[in-house]
Image (cartoon, rainbow, N blue to C red; front, side, top):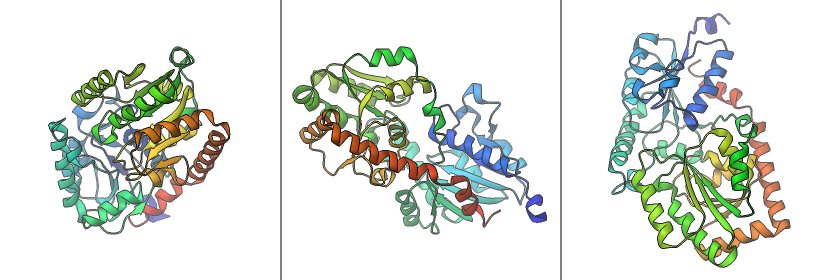
Length: 362
């Protein structure tokens, strides 16, 4: 229609733009969708928060105000305290917010105070943005309900738009051979951050290794840039519990991550604060049975799949891990449930849903 042709652009604003980060990945997928609809579409962030090799792929947020015309649309990915949130509030165009959750600062207090400050600032900014956008979306009902508490209009839920093909691609052979050495691999994937409660994974793994399966390994994949103190606490705990074969390997390339998933027997998630938790979906792609603590958006993302625990009884969790490894009938049933959940997720037309949610500003 003529009206749509007069619409120029849908731009996205992000707190940071980097490789392997869920929101950056989603923004790239969405940019492709917006361009396929015939809109111009760019990604804006603070230059210092854009990975140097990606600086051709994203623009500095300072340019955004000059670029955005009144009938353009700006979509803010709200996830942390950032100057980008302030810049968004001042744009002269139509606005949409997609809320990915801001971890409560208390998880970081006393461990990484700098991060705690950024999170507090983010929550303050989020509250101030409550009246700025015509369209409000969240990637889980858990996140949507948080926005409502802050005085936002009723938000619609748009699950994370993921590119699952990356996961089905090549697995690094060297990593695969290294991990595929006869030990039973229990894994967790996600940023090395206190809200993820990786110390609780280690506590459960202690019982698993001591009483259930001696020949076992715990692997955590996830960046600890900026959370080195928390990472150091985990290493201390590993020594104190005298755990063998604990690999906290930090950030990896996609092909290395794929290899870790391929050799894993159980995905153990003890996290207490997740806005969505993409690694749960990744584990489903690789047929790794999931055992997870039922907190925040985790039950919603699992949607009936995996095994949920409601309390952290590490001895019982260890026993359940053993059953998921050895009891083939149970293992197969859990994997089938996860495949069904993944099929439901992949059958959704997320581009169509995105278009519907944005209809008021299109």
